[in-house]
Length: 284
View 1 (cartoon, rainbow, N blue to C red):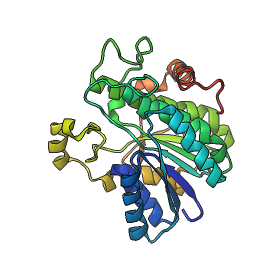
View 2: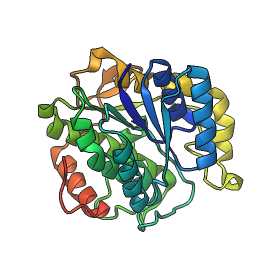
View 3: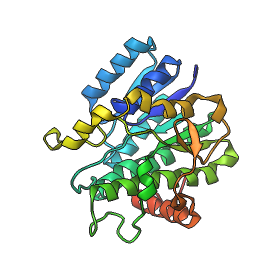
View 4: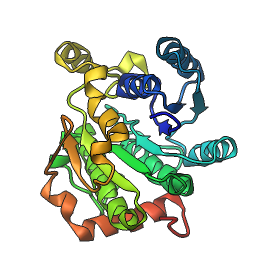
């Protein structure tokens, strides 16, 4: 990964931090995203110290605000000419229904729409790489997911798992759309299930409302380092340099849900995502 530039969302904790650490140790320039500046700087300093790699940068952004996503991408473009790997890692599960700044259901907004917009706005940087890679961290939850096109913000039928599984299915559909559109350019796009990882993704942003079951179950989950293995593999391995449109588990391609291969759903979600993110046209 020497001379490679990698951007990772949700990089200050969990599998995002573990992915950042592993790729930094391989010699990559790692651009970390975090929502909280203090936590982001703490993670960055730890990675620099342990990896002996000083080429680690930090960008602050609240993915629940699409205007903030736009501001962050402009800062990235001003500092760096090229991006070799985009690891769309950040994800959250909220207990109660919440909305983003733009009024979208929170999990769909953070887990899918922010990364859709981010990828659109950074695609020209990825095009400058001789072997650009886009990696979307999904979940096995997508197997029971459904895109509720008639109620995308789940105002009428909310449950936290319904919202989460919808967003994780959107990650896989987005991956397949990117594959169809970018494979001719030599840019790959793959998604993955990291395993059930002991991280803070399922904790409410208010620590007083954290999911007690998730805290207890964390004792039986994978470590962030173990959970990051497939992300790191897809970001760095020459074995997958020309593989695209696949869904990985334990560093092996496996079948994703039947719904995820539905081309009508792929296109319908793409068009809806363009509309919801306010893009007049697609850059991909």
